[in-house]
Length: 71
Image (cartoon, one colour):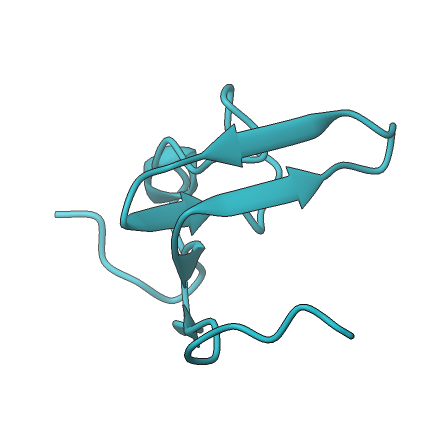
């Protein structure tokens, strides 16, 4: 019988920034490595700028967005 969770996993997509995933979470990366977190909410990097990839470290904020004022 398949593993059926009590409730669906919730993933929140924003216009900018990471995917917010309700945990605990296991992520299998392209190279086959597995990253795991038992936190109640994790931020998964989508821009690949994070030094903690696959987890977001807010590196996406350091780059200015086109058409936005920087002051």
